[in-house]
Length: 352
Image (cartoon, rainbow, N blue to C red; front, side, top):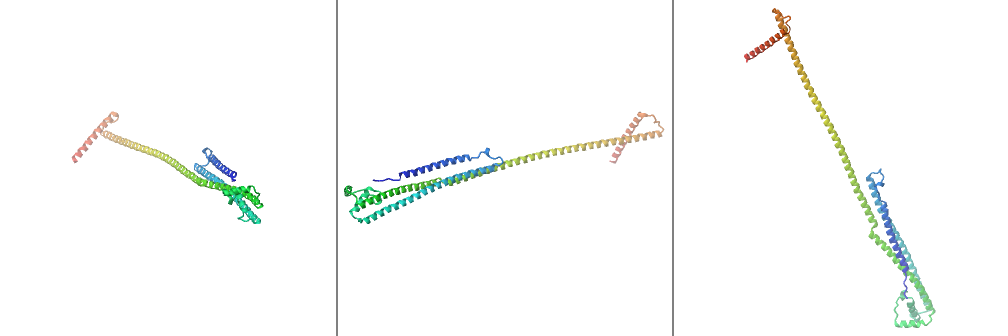
């Protein structure tokens, strides 16, 4: 008769492992939901903050979520490992307790043998060991199930005979030992399952690199945010330069217009000055001509008066001569001028 033990407990352990895997998957789904909820939309952002500050805060929040989720997962993994290690520790204790009980059973049988005075090589002892191999094959030193033909014949002979008191009590102790042996086997199976669970979790942790991946993702988020912020700063600087350039251009255009208007005013004033100077020259010329004409008239009047005086002194009647006389006098004076001019011309020729 061979007894198999530990199936129920193994099933329970593997069920717990499956539950842990399902829980890890559920944690991953919850992490994705949290990550989606953590997405920041521009419409939800406070308006009093500048875009660069908002982008930096958004990146920091997302990076912290990566690390926090990884930290939570890692903490849950540590808790699972600690739980299975604690259960494994309990099974180790159970194994040691049952092994001690098995050793006590064997010590009790040895004390019985000595107490009943049964020799180790006696037929009674040999028959007892043969019966133990038949009824309790899982007990350590009696694990050999193969019987020789002679042993089978002896077992048949023992079936019809009553057991000695020593043999009866030893077989009862073997029954107790078998119970402890089963418990030890169950504890060993559970220990192996718990240790296997710890190894599997640690192997999965090595494969997943949860914290390292989270840190890398967080670093990527911050690096991308840094690039975005640099781009935003460049755009702002560009806009500022464009605005400054536009303002400068408008100011220069305004100055150019003002300068052009001023130059036009200067040119107008220059033209006005030139016109005024020309008018002044014209007025001066007119005044000079008028002065020359006045002088000429005065001269003519003096000559006329002188001529009238000479005529009066010569006894010529000049009274009431009127305009006709004056005209004749002017004609005479003109002729006299021509004669004077001719005389001057002759004098010039002679000098030459």
